[in-house]
Image: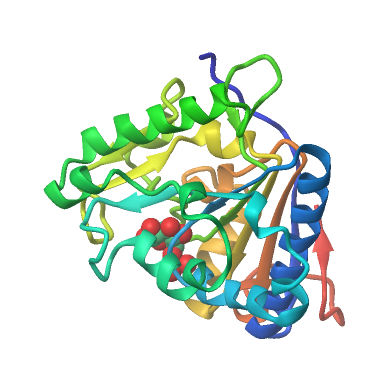
Length: 269
Ligand SMILES: O=C1O[C@H](COP(=O)(O)O)[C@@H](O)[C@H](O)[C@H]1O
């Protein structure tokens, strides 16, 4: 598969509180769910780990729980820690406990890291099997492909960023950020524990139709400011999308980005 870089501009919305950010993220997700379920009968959603999962609980409000066509959702992970499924560090466990067990998405539509590789700590094997899983779903037309490139195109990815500017398990200064041909790669010396992880590669991440990056708290403010100064040493600064790459920030996370005076909500390109 040839590598692809899309060029959608980065946009941000700053919310006064985390709660308002979470509400907007739920509304954004529900709107896209309606669009894609209507257009193609499937909605492919990619989750990350971290704080994001707790914010997703806004989707458990009755207005969403009752209206979303959950049976059409297909769930993937942008990155996963290579630990047993029931380990406290597992992104799968985090999402199951905090969100997926509370919505009627068919279990067959939830595509976790291979259970045996996870239990054995086999990062390379897990990456190979996850890539094969994605390719099978492309062949079944559950996942679309990006134009003529053959790269998978997910409908919506919900992403987070660490204080060092990592997104998914693509870390600053680590070679995985430069991978151009694989769909899924792995790392065995992640600077953030646990050390073994698998991750979508940048071309896959940037092929998604919609990428929503949600970041809260002051600990991330320096990294957010660097992203908005286009410091490409930070993997998160390389985030684009086919249709929209949008950053949802709370005021603390956005506090070091210079903004015009007197605006609480700001949107900039
Ligand atoms: O390790 C990880 O960190 C990032 C960021 O997490 P956050 O708690 O700072 O939001 C997360 O997006 C990624 O999926 C996870 O594996």
